[in-house]
Image 1: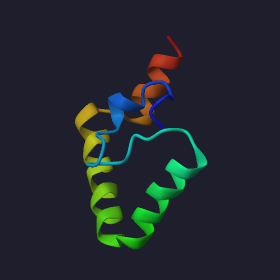
Image 2: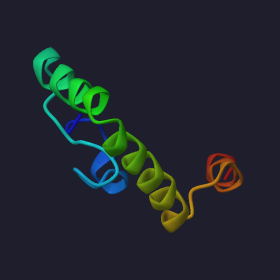
Image 3: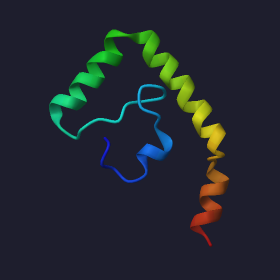
Image 4: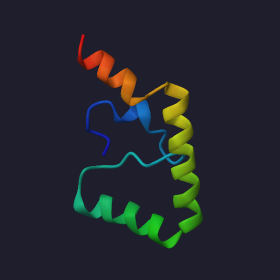
Length: 68
């Protein structure tokens, strides 16, 4: 959803996911869209992996920051 902390830093709306209102209707619409367009879902999944790599997010880095 678009009101959860930090999501807009990770999610590029329409590229590697969706930013949407936190309503049942809005969430259902996005889920339905991905269910009906499996290629879009796969492309977004790949783009999500690319985004994680681009941002350098790893468990080692997360743990390092948490343990500081």
